[in-house]
Length: 345
Image (cartoon, rainbow, N blue to C red; front, side, top):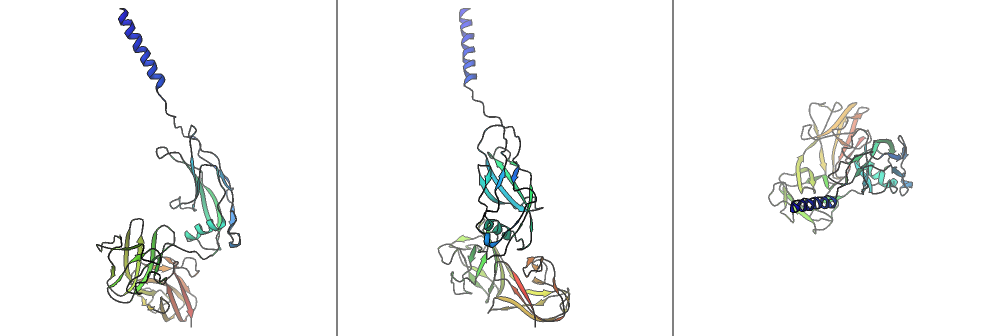
């Protein structure tokens, strides 16, 4: 009997010790998301180049509540209004409740990268996300609406060189380059290859140290790979994604179309390549009406001008020709942001 009670007592002691040694993890009980306290909703900022180094505003918010003390990482994000933060840009990441180093120059560059027109107030949205772990739901602040007016400036976009037989295999030649206008390692540009079976490669920088070709001619880029071949002479649209090391190339024959042309919206009037300027050009009689640029007698690749500011957008609005006359029109694709000129002769 004594042995029975001793055994029971020992079991009870061991169980109690086991319970006392057990460590309880903190319980995540999501509470309030952060709330932006500065700037105020509806604030408007006119960005000026003379103030480029100045701070736009102090961005502050309240603390997120995860139910226990934890190291929180806050990200301040901005996007175009109505975009549901599908393409947010981080203004900063911090463990504190403020970011105080957003300069006019930085915000202006973000707005221009989003292809917002300079000199026009842009409707924007701001939010703060709070995160402690990949295993815990991120808390997101209510959206704050504000406006900012960007200024025009010379933006230096990341670029890839396109050396090859068309330009003497010179990676330092800045007339044969393509650009990443969103600085996201995705590059696009138009290169004219004057002869059939022109061979070329891509380099990052004006030297051969970092270069890509395509060993299998399968659209996958290989470091120091085989030369890529453009089978026919002409203007090619080149797209490179260094995130996935892939590329595409499409030959494009450009023409003018629209109610202002002699054939209306039924067919294109072909443009020709000017080797001296690198532009596609045409001189023709136009009626009062509208025009667009399109490639390969189809609408898959076409340009218009949404803001009537001389800058082109894929699938953009028709370009208005106010009065009849003889015009010289240039399509300018050898730049980072595509443009055009319409000159009455």
